[in-house]
Length: 402
Image (cartoon, rainbow, N blue to C red; front, side):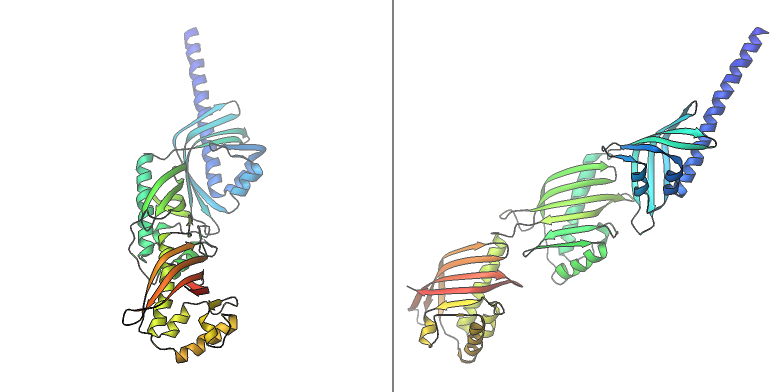
């Protein structure tokens, strides 16, 4: 009889433990359903006032801050792997690998997160009250493979945008997607892929170019399996010039990495590409002069600038001052167009030196001019100051004969 009673008590205790565990699971399932339907409301009503959520990244949020994070979230889909729910008295602890998808009200793309979660609750009536929680973001699986995939994607995006191909698929389709880069005269920033696409069409759309960028010195900072910050150097025109400094913030959406943020910084001063553009302007102006094409010659000048100036002793032979500037120079250019003819001469440049900055350039050189019979006509020391105004334009010239 004693043995039977003992056995009955053991069975009863086992039943009570099983019942308690089942009750905790039921309460957790009801709480999860409520949170998924309206997370902002659930936090407001079920989290205690001193609720704290600790992230593995070091971020600590109180109840008010968490409510702010979910203010524009319509609903959430949550699933768990290896979920374990334990109860001790009125305290319930839930531990598992959580997969969360936030759906927003304002058109922001879904935010997908994976982390190891621990939540602590207190049973009050038929509800679980949130006491505290902790998230630890999971590292990206097979990180080296992810890195190589990202490198390949970033290189191809550069190739495709310069080839004027559609690059929509590389970017996160979100109003918060950001791109910023410095320009030769300042900087440009765009928010939302619609604005980025407009800038792409204006910048790359009318002149496709074949590029084979060299990307080096990568760094990767994974914030979770679905978010990573990438920095690297990019050589667009070979290693004879300085690389641009590149940054990408990437999010993984449906298994594919998308660009959520892009910053590109170039050093425009002194590189071979800009040196060549400056020299092209100088040569175009001189060639047009000898060809008798004053219209093309004048296009190499920034005649609309009030400070544009030409210094040349030859002007004195025409009954003018040795320098002309602003409106005087513009008027001279128009009159010169009416009378100037091809010279039939050739020229040679030597001792050429150029200092090219972001928006201006300073160039000096020696110029020898030869008549059609090959005999020297004159030898001068030349100075040109140029500014970047819809291409490199001459704003000042000095011409001194030896």
